[in-house]
Image 1 (cartoon, rainbow over the protein chains, first blue to last red):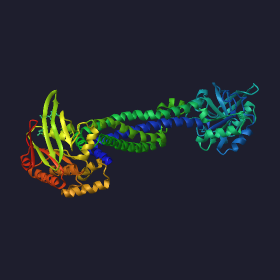
Image 2: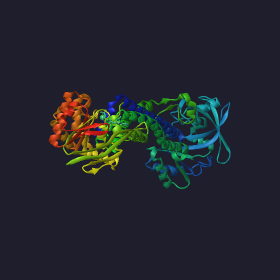
Image 3: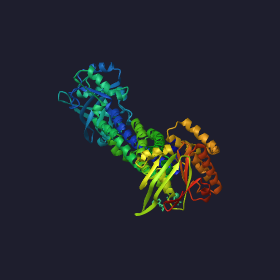
Length: 405
Length: 224
Ligand SMILES: Nc1ncnc2c1ncn2[C@@H]1O[C@H](COP(=O)(O)OP(=O)(O)OP(=O)(O)O)[C@@H](O)[C@H]1O
Ligand SMILES: [Mg+2]
């Protein structure tokens, strides 16, 4: 019955209630939008990194990560391949030769990471093939090289031009080969594009004189959330000679940012919630003051303070919940086209590209925030009604009945 | 048998720092099932007295005994409970909750006593029939005339079978015919249910019909 009364009281001043519902709705939408942007951005950075080169799990020879020298190759790739072929979590994997070297054109030269990859397999692991904007991806032709757009600009080279790659071999001598630019790629990360070049696995092994050897296995699981499981399983099958890391180990900064963001979500909710509280306080106070006579009568006939208090809170709760539900629904609906089409940020593309974000941001709602908003905002609405409810029970029945507006 | 009695009841209001003696020592005793009218000019202290008898306000001095028990020491919450169980109120106006129908308004007082929904509904309906206002059941106060509202207020006041009903100028906003019908109703309830009624009025018609008349003047009872 109290709920019925609360409900009817809300309809009594439709305009005021509507304004409160709308302000809650706007607040909830703001919370969801901020979250979708932040969440989308961080995951986009993470997934871009994963799909650029990090993959889900990497296997190296122990010590490779701290010291990426050519000597730190995997002695016996067959052993790793056996382990990977026999693990059910593995979807696919790519063998890579990685070394630091010098790439020179007729006009310039620069230090790069040289990646030797198997073109047919690598495109299942990374997005380099899809990122080629000019020319074509690596074929099995041994003299092909694909480089990033930024690097091509720096070296002033185009498709078909020749470049020379130089790198140390394990024995200390310098290997060098001529390559022909087959393709130019542009990924969401301009940093990546400046620093990494791709040649075929065999040509890289020739360049470094390490036939049959590789530096890295980049592994993709069926579900990226299982990356740590796969890492742990591989750790138990492979020996201490190997360094096995999941993307979480490899991208600590992105992971930390994600964690910090998830923790600060509550604070964002709370700040917007606090702004909402004032609207609720104001409207509930007005509603209480409009009903002074009524409260006087209710108190006189013996309605106790706790019930009166509860009645006022319920009104705020119903309004707050209505606003939250509509807000969550509209927030969800607004997010659908945004998350599909993305938000074009080519405006500040320069800085975003260096963040490996890309120029189009795809907002992504998190379930956690959805649920938190759904629970927190009605609760905050009720909190906003405490003061008005307190005012109501502080009324003196005698004066309240006599009160003339 | 006595239901309520006062001893040297005084009430002093502070009006911007100036003390106003609204009641100057009231001694009265009212028996169960009596029907008492308190009359007196405006400002004589009728409302003040009813508020004190109804435990809505505290006397400055003096005592009130309800069924021989002094309720001056009770807390706000206890007084609330006391009013809910023993008293019924009818005010001059704004008696009903505007967003509830007549039936719901009556049920509301019963809900406060924790009476289950089904019983609430049945008893309210029965009472509305008894008062011959069952056609108002689903109307909200805004859709009723002043007289109709006051009758519903009577129903609301007596539905919990109070021992005492206090009514402060219940007919003041009504024309004399409607006021008369309201009085009929209260007299009938007084006779049928043995509910004690005390109400204030300065309406001559009401005063003429009074079975017992207390005349208040300047904070004192001048005639029993
Ligand atoms: N809250 C208050 N503060 C100060 N003075 C008050 C207050 N309530 C009543 N009074 C004064 O006390 C006196 C008695 O008032 P009360 O309302 O009891 O009279 P009444 O007989 O009910 O009058 P009316 O017929 O106009 O309703 C009046 O002089 C009034 O001005
Ligand atoms: Mg009065």
